[in-house]
Amino acid sequence: MIDFRYHLVSIVAIFLALAVGIVLGTTLLQEPAVKSAQELTAQLTKTKDELRVQIDQLQGREAGNDAFVTSVTPKLVAGELTGQRVLLVETPSSSTTFREAEQQVLEEAGAEVSGRVTLTEKFFDPDRSGVLDGLVNQLKPVDMVFPSTATVWGKAATLLASTLLTPDQAQAGTPNAATAAVISGFETGGLIGTDGDPAKRATLAVMFAPEKAFEGEQAETQLAALVSVADRLDAGGKGAVLAGTAANAGATGGTITALRDDGEVAKRVSSVDTVDMPAGRVVVVYALREQLNGRVGQYGVGRGASTTQPALQTATPSPTQSGS
Image (tube, rainbow, N blue to C red; front, side):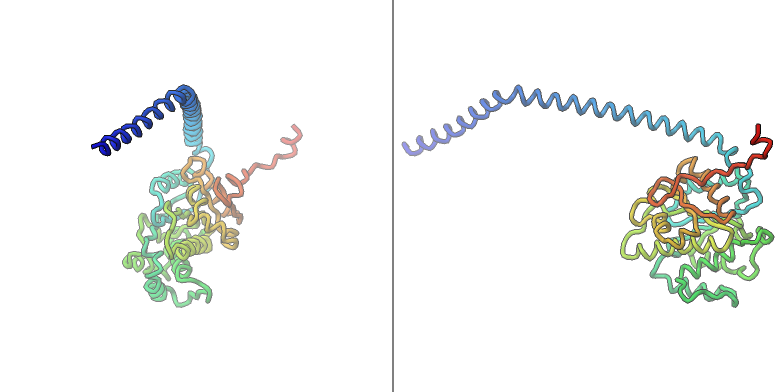
């Protein structure tokens, strides 16, 4: 009985000591701890409110700038692409919204959109490259010879470009009789989809980058394939522009990043990484105009961009104008 009472008293004493310690500790530390926590909370709340105001201001300015650019876009691009036919090329996961908005601006610039071609996931699937290669060899004209270093996608893009594009203004708007079966053959194989009448050849191409970066073991191969397609489209007509967002020019696996990192292709194909902005859609028009004049550039705000836009062309003043 004594042992039991001893142990019971000991246990009670231990818990009582803990309780007293907690009470004393809380009482001693309560005022400075609470005060410090209150001050920190107040500072964080103030910082959050300041940041919220800044974000609201920036969003308001951005919306205002976008509204202004949209309203003056017809004047900014008027006549820039008159007489040119433009092919629109979509890729897996590219934005339909951005493509539709860009198409409107291209038409405001005087261009005629020949049609749209959508390259499917099957087209870029390395596991189906043998099927693609066999189809290309079956559909290509006899006199079409590919370089020994050409990849499967380079060959396929060369064949498509000869079907959909031409550098000869006199041939624009007419089909290539030598490659008449290419579009139907690729469509039957599930490699492309079409809208409009892309068989009536265009002179320029705008290719829209995938919104989702390629991932996995085959990502590098797929990126190289897409860059190869952009390069061949450029060679098939008077020029090409790869359009996307800053995410395409920043993240690993971004298509625009891959193009800009390829020094040789970047010398031929232009890119714009602000197609999600009204100003960027104007820049696509200016980049196409540059391509017509034999120049190339990498534009936007993402990694690898040289500047936001091409240098604006200004008329050289006459001696009379200069004197005045």
